[in-house]
Image 1 (cartoon, one colour):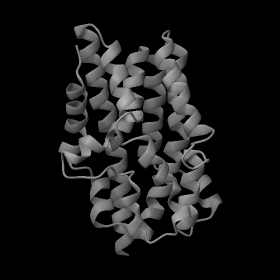
Image 2 (cartoon, rainbow, N blue to C red):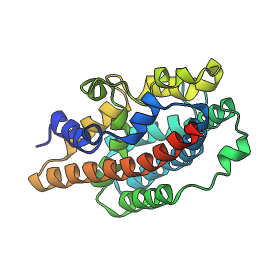
Image 3 (cartoon, rainbow, N blue to C red):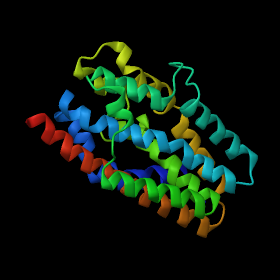
Length: 238
């Protein structure tokens, strides 16, 4: 059987132990110029993320995880009760705070690594057994799990505190306010992901495959965001 610590260790191996460049950017090199590189890329990611849960739902015969994913999608796509906006919409607002136009954020042509990653998650969420697809998508939220981040002396990247040094008016930081409420704390989206994985991975083979998928998905995520971070750090030095 899988335990919470097994899932945490898989995330840590692929994320925190690998010293993600995006963490370095936000911790040490955060600038408005760099954030303008990050924002349209992450907005593009945020626009696709809920769709992958939709793919998994289509393959999932179990009502409990379906209900969780539908609720997660509603918060992402329709109305987050913390901010009464969508997560995609609040990222556009963040871009406006950085001096970007809505058109610049919404019509951004994503980088090749981001486009490759989008295809990866679309494929794995459609074609693999539902629990593996769920693990690949849901584990992405675990990169922002507060308890896990604190083990490495860090604060989750989607914490508002990380982005406040940009000096933006609070109305432009609502995306990170919503993330503070949804992901890092106990009982949030990240903890629900762990709970469902632990509950439904029953055989040794299921456990092995799920943990392999978690590591693979986080490695893809890290590769994409390391590429974004390198460009963001360079933009801040110009």
